[in-house]
Amino acid sequence: GYWKPSEAVVKDIVNLHAGLVKDFKAGCSGFVCDNSKLKAMIEQNLTGTLKETYNKDINNVRTGVSSGPKQEGMVLQKEEFTTEKVKEIIKENMNAFISLIAAIALVIGAVVWGIIKRRKQN
Image (cartoon, rainbow, N blue to C red; front, side, top):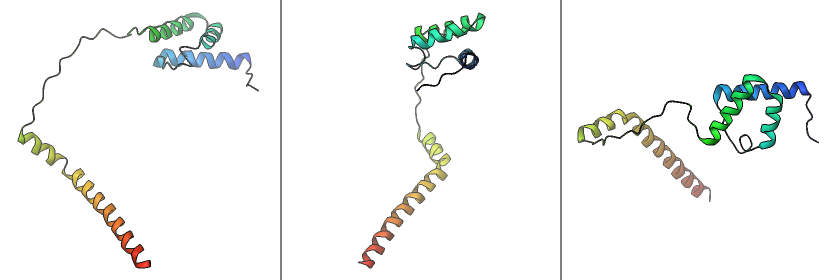
């Protein structure tokens, strides 16, 4: 059957859950925010400001209310690449490029070596 925790354990878990929602905001999955039985059980076991904060945070997430200041839109600037910028990017990433080529060469070498070895055995 299902686990039947004591009232003290339920209160501890509910307080921990409400505290985490208060500190880190609700990460609403269907199990948390859309679960009316869970919400009722949590409300039944919470008291005071923690209960009010929990309900407010869950409702804010469900309705999409932003907790921060309203941010205006941002216009992106077009970035143009010149040959100097491209050369600089290549120069900055040369070690990664060489490592990639070496890894590809090793893989190809291992495959060729395996094919040659297998043909010699047959």
